[in-house]
Image 1 (cartoon, rainbow, N blue to C red):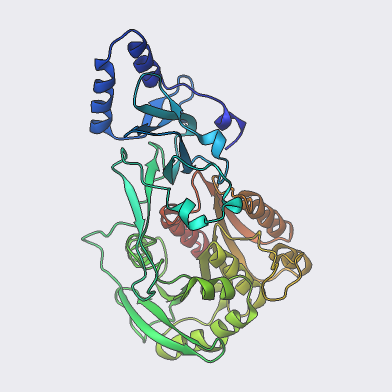
Image 2 (image 1 turned 180 degrees about the horizontal axis):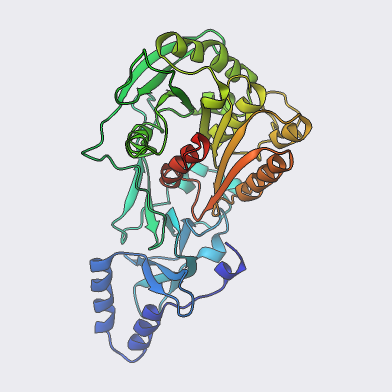
Amino acid sequence: MGDSEKKSFVSPRIARGGDALANGERAALDAFWQEVALNGSPLIEPLEGEPNYRLVTFLWRDPGETRNVVVIQGPAYWGDWYNHLLAHLPESDLWYKTYRLRSDMRTGYWLSPNDPLIPLRETEDVQAHWSRFQLDPLNPRSHTYPKDDELPDDEDFSFSLLELPDAPAQPWIVPRPQVPQGKLEMFRLRSEILDNERRVWLYTPPGYEPSATPYGLLLVFDGLAYIHPSLVPTPTILDNLLHEGKIPPLVAVFPDSLSLEARNRELPCYPPFVEYLTRELLPWVRARYHVTDEPARTIVAGSSYGGLAAAFAGLTAPQVFGNVLSQSGAFWYSGKDEHDIDAEWLLTRRFVESPRLPLRFYLDVGLLEHTHDADMVWCNRHMRDVLQAKGYNVTYREFMGGHHYICWRGTFADGLLALTGKE
């Protein structure tokens, strides 16, 4: 994203329609909407002389009394309402907004008709404001994050999907009929350290044999998200990569994050959580499964707060975790108002101050991950620079997308390939 995305761009298709209307050709508008019904929205058009970009036009058909429409997320910054308002085509029911976007973008978005245009931080009823955000009724493609049936107040979470022609392929997430499937089991385990109980899913690869050489170990936070076919289908990814000989056989452990409150307490640099992993969860796994105790063959992984937690686990327990896979790690986290950590404390600074440890890293981040709270791109680049300056082995990737499982489901395989040494 940059200043160019804030400039006004003209869709050739919209321009032709506007000229036709100005010349009294009312049938042109009907023909336009028939075209949209056939091909869907947003409009995607080539940009002359720029093969790596497209003109992307978001559309809204006025059902009556439309005062404004705002693009929410996707190519839009949170809360920057006025730069992402759709324009009204005179003498029509058509509202539109055109962007110049990289052709490899994959992201999600909403539209907000008749938005109050008040920053969310200043909104008295945030939930009511959120309720205005809706799927694009002209876009047949959407994606849903399914609710957790064990959380009484949880709900499905859906957004409209935008994938431009050069968005990276995600070949490892689709089950293949000829590929043997590993086994996924669910357990409920009580933690004395954290004083709670959670689901833990455990994956064993096809042909798992307890008498074989100890298997590599993969620990992934936000377990439900990383086993669900609609989010990051890690069991399928592991099956496919293993079948192609891209990775060694791994046993994977997926602890649940319980509620949002528990997740916000446990994942952001919380020492008792690392103690739980090293003193309770992994000893339980090793007592029942033939897995390695070598840090160099153990990967700890997660996204957002989970990516932060993975890096913190590597820093504080390098005798257990030798590889960190962080997807859009929340390295902006300062500890302010949580865990009584000084507001100036940062995990990045801890890595600056600590001696170099026997760790390897995979970090990635989406170039659309800018919010009113933090610049995820900057903080991930900063973490990368610090780690490289300390002499760590770091694989770093950026993708043209947002803070979404629809992106992480593709890049998770990249992290496994980088850290298992078979890339």
